Length: 210
Image (cartoon, rainbow, N blue to C red; front, side, top):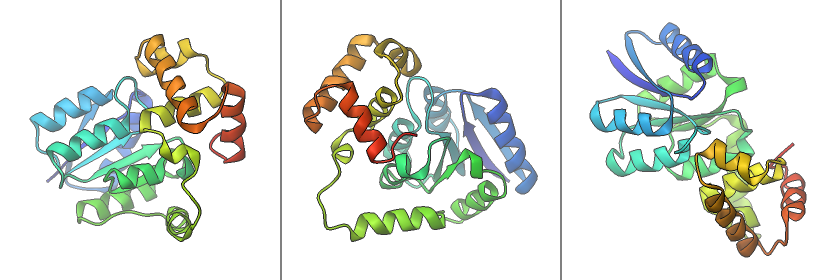
C-alpha cells in the first residue's frame, strides 16, 4: 500500500485532491496537513512514499518545506501543486528537487499521472514546462533580475506587484511587517528598482503577474 501526504491550507481543495488521488491510485493511505509546518512535522515522524505540497501556505511555503524535506529525506519524491502559472515558480521548484510541478487548474487525471510517475522514481514534466526549461537552458542572456532573488524575496515581490500592502503580505505569510519591509528593501537593493511601481511594472512586463 502506498502512503501519501497531501498538504494544502484550504480544506475543500485538500479534500478534493485526496479524493482524486484515492480514486486513481489503489491501494493508498493518504494523510493530510493544513500548513507547511504540519507537513514537515509529519514527514519527519512518518514514512511516506510521496508528498504533494501546495506552494502557497501560511508560514512555511511549499518551497520552504520542499527544501527541508530534501535535507532530511532526499529520496522522498515531492510534487508541487500551485494556483500560479508554471512560469512563476515551476523552475524554482524543479531546481529545489521537486519531482514535478502542476497547476491546480490542470489537476485531475494529470495529477494521478504525475503521482504514478513520481512513485516510480520518475520526474513529471509537462510539455509546457519542458519548453520553459529548454528556453532557460538555451538562453545566452544574463539571468533576469527576479532570478537573483531568494524564494521568499521572489514571493514577496509577486505579492507587492499584485498590489498587496505590507500589512496584508505579513498576515498572509505569517511574518512581521518589519520582516516584510526588510524583504522589500532587499528586493530593491538587488534589482536596482526604486519603488513598488517599478516592481509592478517589471513583474507585468515579464508576465509574472496578470
